[in-house]
Image (tube, rainbow over all chains, first blue to last red; front, side):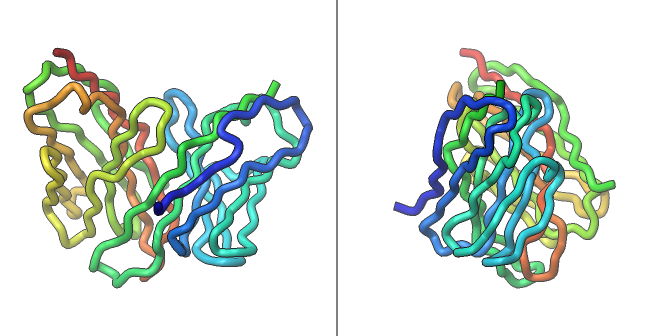
Length: 118
Length: 115
């Protein structure tokens, strides 16, 4: 079954304790991305990756790191989590390359990770 | 500054009625515009994707329109059902040639359908 998986689904941690949220897709997608969603603010892009070893900042990259060493995985790293990083996090993936003006590819979202930093 | 604005912020309609949601954007250069449906606590699910050359696209009871000149899009829902209750999100992609680039999200319109 084609899917995007995230782990863990729920996490409660304390300020300053490094954590990693994993994201994996089995669709051979080039493009992967991380988002956070907060009430009243909608989804905001944290980082995205257009392919292996290619990453770029989104709207809200501060306090986060990512890596893309292999195509299927795109972990999100919080080196020193703070309470303002309490949020619902989504990973997504899609094919990336398409002919300009000819359309684009569907983006598939994972189930979400609810993170609480105390 | 690249932005996506949606209106209304929330909307309540009766089952069986139609409704239209709006999206205005300033993203440039523009690549494509997507509408997503998101149920509470779950990941968004795509409804439509449109490029600058497409004026309208349908997906069942959902019809999206795009005016690339005025940078406006709308999502029309016909004969609403209780299951349509969700947040509807407009997303605009920045043109990076033939590669998917940065995405800009609206804050969504929260639709509630009452029986």
